Length: 227
Image (cartoon, rainbow, N blue to C red):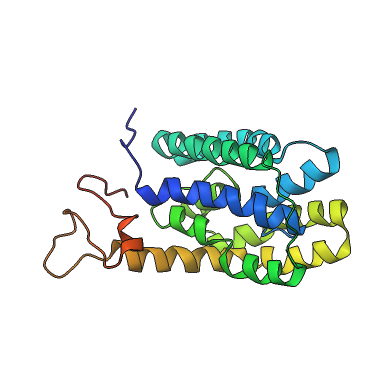
């Protein structure tokens, strides 16, 4: 079983950030960026369940698609990402937070930054087992652009938010969700250009160095070059 040893640091940071944004921003504002996280929020609110448990349940079904068509290595780390994200969502949902976001502020933040964590993962070919994983398989197998498949799949999440929180939440979620594919590709491109570009004096197989303390968090190491 040809499984790569470790994904880059951004993989783990992206999983935790995705869970935090979903629970502390999207769930509390009743607006979703779409994806399995948005579907999980809608179902969890309707059935009064823990959002992390619902997230893991849905991604468990998606995993079979990734395993069959995406390869064992991708499926393994997709499973790890799904478990890490779902586990963090479960833990975050148990934290008693009373702060309520102004809805339009939350809408702006979600529209601009909610796909940043997914972009970090997609920039190196990973996902957390949600719609992005299905989109990556469709892109590889059928050459369907990621933004197209995500726009179609996200209609399910929009419906869930509409049913659970009404027309306004459904409409705001639709605006974000239907542009999520473009946002995901944009953040993935930004991540690649910022984090993966080799310096002129350093071959691509050596350690990549980036300026600034924040960039150092995502530094890659030798032998951690995925396809």
